[in-house]
Length: 153
Length: 108
Image (cartoon, rainbow over all chains, first blue to last red; front, top):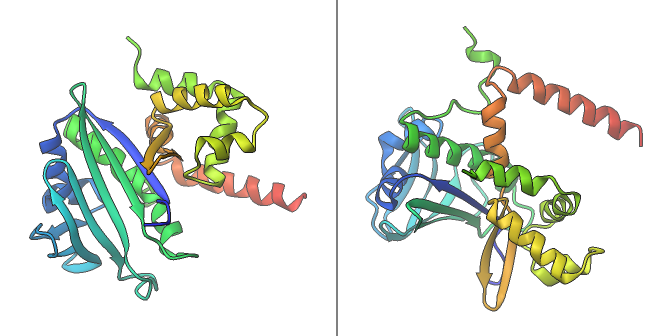
């Protein structure tokens, strides 16, 4: 662990650690805030993790830490866009209750030097976290950030 | 009542603090010493500004051994965008921004 993390994102959510942790591990909920991707796993340390959409696994990994409702970590290996050959990186969520809110800290690290995955994922996380916050606080997720003219009625 | 968004705008309404965010954007995860070494500000001033940025959730920190690393946290700025930029406007704004960048880079 000599290299420092590349990204740390923090968001405060008016919810409980249990609800936030559930949202991070529930495929039906994740599909709503994570652009349709279902987080799929048996959620045991060492078990497989996958982001599923349309019956296909887009990203996979292994559960590295599972400590509800405080900490969740998995390795992250994209299977698309020519990123298959890069070694998996690591995603960690830390949940902390502060004054009736949840401080959710998301760390993405363990990238190789000159990673191709890093620039691809770096713009997505703030959007996913904002949508998760919106879903938990208002019951309504945010539309995917790239949806513009395509879905205009 | 002061909301977190009030804190975000107060924190951003200062050139020195925006400069600190620029430094972190260029090189994420710096210690206080690293930030001070490259800025014409006293250590005390940098430390005070960082505390304000952290209170506004624009800077996230992590401890590594005895060091405290500072990260630019773009989530509150993203939320400002979500609040005032409609989903239909986003792609056009991106196109304008790309055009501006391309034209201005070409002038150098």
